[in-house]
Image (cartoon, rainbow, N blue to C red; front, side, top):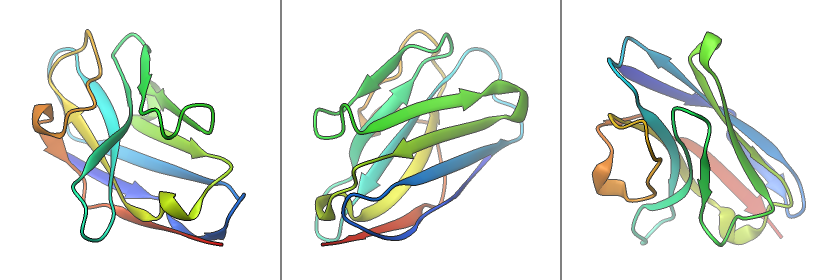
Length: 123
C-alpha cells in the first residue's frame, strides 16, 4: 500500500488550499483515513479523520475551516483548507488505519503513511 499526497504550496493568510491523497494498492477490510501535520520542532498531530462510513473528526484548531472528504471510486482522500493561518504551516501527511468504525486522530493508531506535502502560510 502506498499513499501519495499532493496539493501543498505557499499561500497568504486567509487563503485556501486543497490537499489530495491517492491510495495505491489494496487495504483489505474496512479502514479509516486521516490527515496529520508536523511543524518544525513540534510533534505530529492529528488534523482530521474520516471513517469508512463517512463520519468525520476534527481537531479543535481546524474546526470550521478544514473539511475532510473522500472519493472511494478514485481511492482519493481530500483536505479542503480555508481561512489558512500562519500557524497552519507544516508538513501535511495522510494516513490509513485498518479500522472502519471510527477515524482516530492519534498518530500511533495508523498503519500506513504518505511522505507528506508542505503547506506554508505567510502573514
